[in-house]
Length: 112
Length: 111
Image (cartoon, rainbow over all chains, first blue to last red; front, side):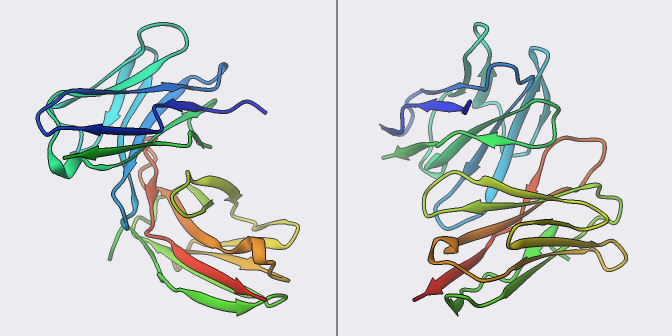
């Protein structure tokens, strides 16, 4: 069964450092998303990406965040200068038609 | 009203029990509704979409009540493996694709 894959599974970084979280969406999907979940809290939408551009973003997705699809398979989330409050599980998701989402297993980001 | 609201639980039920979860949503124009399941520190997994006519998948039944703006999930004959957090998920704005998640209802099925 096709799946969304994310790397790394865990990322530890120092405050102020840049991190890049990587995702390989399901191959025939057209819509890509990043969500995050702070420990003990609900899953929150960050950004959606379609046709090589951002289609929607939330208030969380400020200038410190960026997304890229550098080639035909990868989809990345970059946090330019990490803060303590960026510590969370980051989930990548993809969708064929834009409705039903399939999530990757997540990257646990810890900012020290 | 919170955008998507759920009773956090936990619901502790014995094996074989029937359990029901409700969820309310804020925007009467919302069109897409889902139940996802999330195991501890894992990714959300789609359990079922919720249609206006209601739908059933084995032991799971989902209902939508647009007039009252709530959706429900019924689990019959609970199994130990049903223990998880159940997330109510809604596309609140038909002009957008972003999904809004509820905080989840935790279910613990006991032997």
